[in-house]
Length: 249
Length: 267
Image (cartoon, rainbow over all chains, first blue to last red; front, side, top):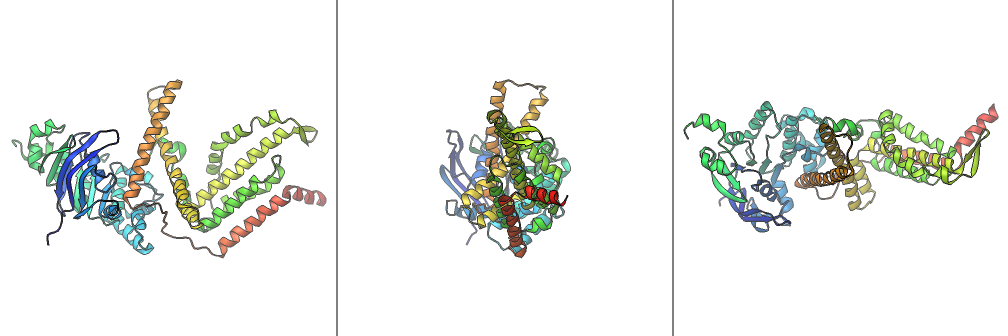
């Protein structure tokens, strides 16, 4: 038996109540353990797409499958356990009084025993190297620490898929480098939405270019990003790192 | 690091206080909640001109502040912050009710001044008791306790979100104030204010939605769960019984007068 793809979108369409059609027939498939980037200019539909992956938005038309199961009202709780979403602004994601309480929030909601919750939260904080901050209030952390804790809140739920919205925003170069090392060490299926194309080159072998709610290109990151005409036509540019690697590409 | 806005409203200080450890903090959330409720009922049930009989009740907030190692200055500032509401409620009483009801030495005191003083005292008592309850328990434990006591889930969740979004709106508001100040504008017209408040509402709704999204992404289903559930013991029962007895005694007889008479007789 072949394993079903981690994420599968079939002809996904979505229109906001005001009539804006944000997604117009998006189909894609992400295999288990794969790292895929979703890139595109502002308003391309990236955030709308991400919100479909854990059932926050429901498709107007088409289907979203996670681990082979379609997202529906009955499966949404299960899907939210399987798909860990890391928000663009960690301040939106951290809402409890202490770092530990925040990381424990997910496992606690899944009805685990206090001992199991404690174990999971400790392990998740250790994984991102933030265990020493466990008693600190989240709003007093630095941007890098907040980001790491936000990732821990998601890891504590033991998700199969990690979805990250602009993971490197607001990070200083060292914090960004640490994040890249951390993300590289995860063997989850990863879907990264980012404008930080250099980060994408380092982390995702495959990229999907979105514009106007449709997929414009889907292929190997280096190949895609080296296509200057394509990038410029969709509000992006060829990242510097590729200029050094493939000066004439 | 949160700068600016955080310094104004001391975001999260209440949460920090609630995570301290003291005998008061360790008490069951339900015991503290129930005692506070009885205290509020006792305070509110006094007659409108009552002033001296309210005084002994100040023992409660002072004793709890000391017992819970809570910063008195911080709590007083918070009470003062809300004081204008009480002032507005009672400010017209001295003008409307001029009948002399009492004398301080040879100086007549009208019913209006007495009821105004009574409103202020009651305000200080109730607000400080509420703040202390929050500071020594934390909103999450408090909500979990309220749910255990049988408060419908919809109210518990409302309470939780009210608290969470209060800070959200505060932060957004202060961010806007800062941006207005940075553009050198000190006095604003009514139109600008209107537009600012409209924006504040929209931004707060957006932010609140994102936070809610983060909560449901992590399995929030309307039930408030806490890691370390409270297990009530004899200390909690003694806390409720002891303080309730004191509140009832203070309500039934005027303890200030009683103490005054005793001291007077001794002298």
